[in-house]
Length: 210
Image (cartoon, rainbow, N blue to C red; front, side, top):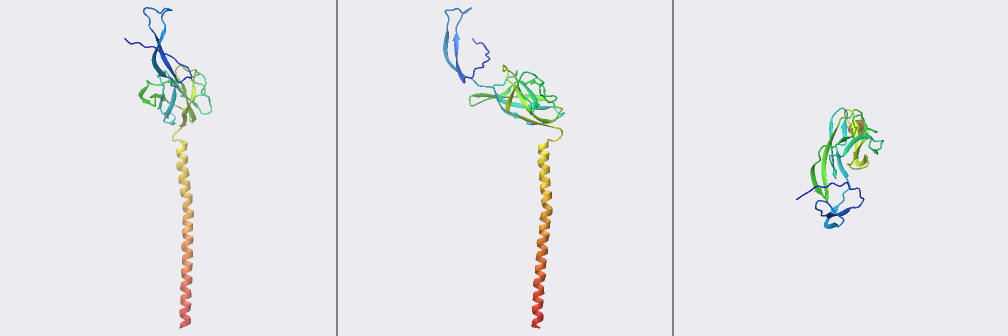
């Protein structure tokens, strides 16, 4: 037969083993736990990737999170970059529209280096721009906490970073053009003066010979 049992492990250890107690209708003091010889790795929940990291205001955006030990009961919210992620308040420090919400059912699971890495999504429609970060509440944990790949930029229209980069390149390109033109003009002018000087010397020599 088969059965299901759920544990909410909070141990800092990295591995453990399973012990089993066989009972009939009920367990008595005479029945003891037996060592099954099955070792269980303890994997701390962790996010490894968050995409995208730039969001537009007034646009419903799907954020994909990837990591180990993710569940559909985990929760996510978006707060301003200078706010903390501690606690269980779903709206503390959030950008408008970034209140806490659960993940969609976890999917696309693969085993990577003894870890079960999965992906899940969550939708946000933010109405206020600014630098932000993702806060994550692992199911069974004490509350929201910061995650390493959680930095976000929320922009109205086009994100400032890409606009600034383009503008800077354009300014650098346009400001260097006049200098290049001026240098070319000066070079051509000097060459013309030298050429005329040589011609004048040749004419003077020819007149002396005559």
